[in-house]
Image (cartoon, rainbow, N blue to C red):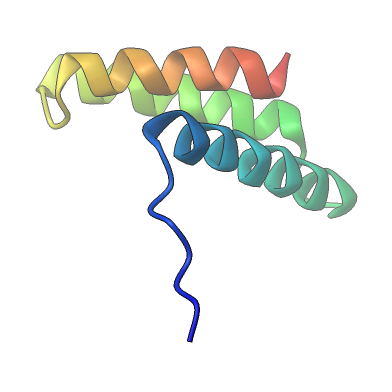
Length: 72
């Protein structure tokens, strides 16, 4: 039985970005939800996470960077 090698951090990030791109495409196809609405929601969520410190600042910054890259 062959086991896949553990992906590197870079590979995991690339996979996450790809997943997000597919998610955005799927959501964009739905009538009630758009990529713009997802972008707005993520912006509000990041502001709240930063304000309440419910997530580490570096994690919020990484999510914001991912948001800009995927939803641009």
